[in-house]
Amino acid sequence: MKHEEDKEVQGLSIVARYTITAVVLAVVTAIEVLVLYPPLVRAGDTFKIALLAFLGIGKFILVVGLFMHLWNDDPIFTGIFGLGMVIGVGTLVALLAVMNVYPHRSDAVKAPPLRQIYEDREKVRRGEALPHTEQHSWRQWEALSA
Amino acid sequence: MSAHGSHLIENPHEIGTTGLPHRKIMMWLFLASDCMFFGALISTYLIYRGRSIAGPTPEEIFDIPLTSTSSFVLLMSSYLMVLALAAIERNDLTKFRVYCLGTAFFGSIFLGFQVYEFTHFYHAGLTLHGSVFGSSFYVLTGTHGCHVAIGVLWLLALFFYSFTGGVTQRRALDVEIAGLYWHFVDIVWIVIFVAVYLLEYII
Image 1 (cartoon, each protein chain N blue to C red):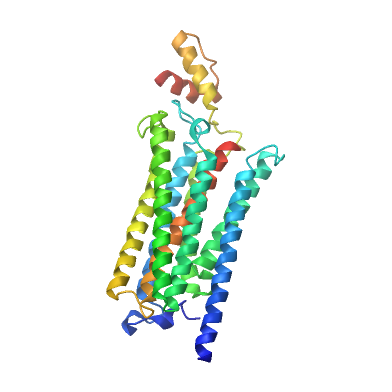
Image 2 (image 1 turned 120 degrees about the vertical axis):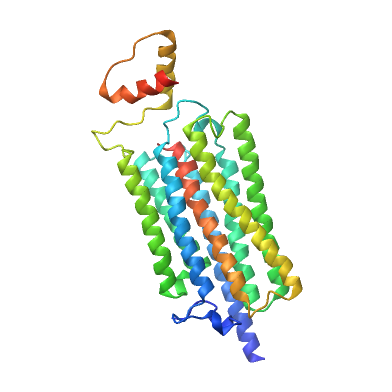
């Protein structure tokens, strides 16, 4: 009887822990959405991206650690999943670097805003010439091939 | 350290020389490979981000309050899933059925949101073939949606199987493995929600 009561108390504490985790996850999701609204968060883009990344990683760790039990499970599972994560994130970083997506690369041909592409396309339709610079070369190609 | 819930395993042959259940190791290996799969899809979306020459643009069609609601629903389904596992580990079959069905229901609501979103986007002019944004967006979120749909079917199978006596405390590993898959689907959405939806309104 005592053993059954202990199990029940232990069960309740587990449920309470999961409930607290769920509430924290919901609050963090709400904060993520609020970051988008300028009247609420007057901060630079870099800060907002860093904050979103921090909150996203926090949610990720909470779900993987507590809901998937990696926190108190065998380290082999953490190793297996960690290896997959390293390869997955490594692929992402490598591909972004290879495709010149990083804006700080001064020698990279940056992706132009969509509005510029629309404007260039309209210029091409009207028969107007586009500026011939190396930075705009692929933009011209997109506008001409549209 | 022993594996979580390994004392509840019915068949001793399921435990290998590592002292861990084979099926659980296989599920973690599958999830690790799925990390690479989604890593490639998210990379593709980010590489082609802002390079479409045809509209509509993400800012024109994304509905952040709607997507936030669906994200919240998926998070809560993860909560119900972990409660279902805790219930079956306590041999509380009634609560397991309630939480398992609740998880499948919340997963279905998430799928409903996605169907609504896809329909709305299609009518707004975003098609699979129309632009690189459309292609990369539909492939990424559609693949995730397929994972959710498979998870819902899996949970419903467990729910109905429980009425035949197939889901018991000694077979809690079946529920744990389904739970691992479901939580993984949730964490993939956490990344997609930030990288695809929220990032669009910042840079």
